Image 1 (cartoon, rainbow, N blue to C red):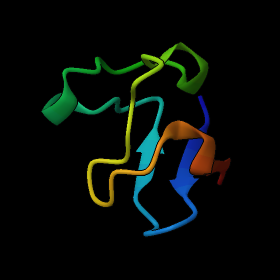
Image 2 (tube, rainbow, N blue to C red):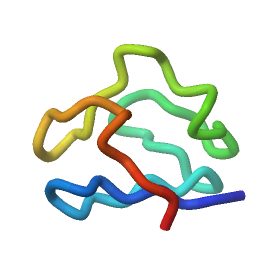
Image 3 (cartoon, rainbow, N blue to C red):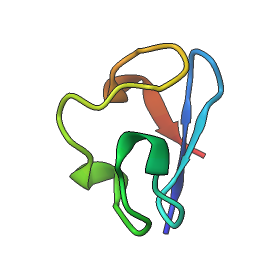
Length: 52
């Protein structure tokens, strides 16, 4: 499992944890996130994330 960080605000998406607030179950790979996924803190799209 990998982790990805928003390059704008630093919010971290951890594949092992998912994101319960957005309905993303633990174990969801970053590549499998919905196309319309955005950073929950600053709202940028997933293209602004980098592997941490």
